[in-house]
Image 1 (cartoon, one colour):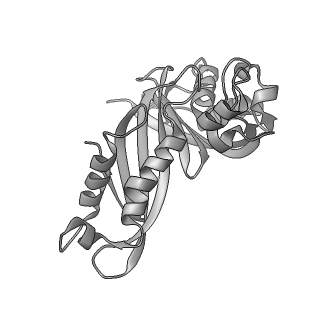
Image 2 (cartoon, rainbow, N blue to C red):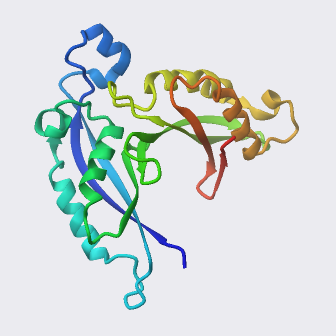
Length: 250
C-alpha cells in the first residue's frame, strides 16, 4: 500500500518586517513595499503540516494525532507572539518572509521522530497569501500562492465573484528571502486579470456564447505565464463557488 498523507493545522501569531539594514530607505521601499513599514506588522499564521507514512495495522493511523499535536505546539511556542526580527535568532541574517519562516519551521519539525515523514509545510500569512516547502523540492525552493478576486458575468447576465489563486515556484532569493516580487506580481495580475475581467461580461471579452471556468483559467494562465517577474508560474486555480473550482497548469 502506498504511503498515506495526513495534514494537521495549527495557528500562532507573530510580527515581522521586511528590511535589509544595509539598504537605504528608497531601496527597501522599492523592493519590499508596505512590508518595509516600521515598526512591524503582525499575522495570525495558519500552519498546515503534512506528514507521510504507512497506516499502522493496530491503530489504523499514520501517526498518533496526540503526538503530532504535542510536537507542533512545542515548536510554535517558540515563535508565538514574537517579533521575528527582534526575538528570533534564526532571522539575524535573513528576512523573516513566509518562505524563510516556512523553512525554519521545517528544520524544527523534520528531526521529530514521532510525527512520521515530513512531506509538506504550508504557511498561510492570511487568506490571500501562503508559502509551501516540500520534501521533494528541498529547502532552497518554495512555492508562493497569492489570491486575487474579481466579479464578472458568465452566462446568466448576473455577476458572480471569482477567486483566482496564482502559484509561483522557484528558488528562494538569498537576499530578499522571496520566490518572486510580490509587489510586481500584484501589479501584473491587477493589469492582466482584475482590470481585464472585473465587472465585465466574459462572453464579450472572450468572444464566445458560453465561457466555462476551465476556459477562463486557461486564458488567465496564458496572459501571465510569460510575464512573471521571477520564479515560474506553476498553477492557476479559479474558484467559481464553494463547490466548484478549476486548475490550469499549462
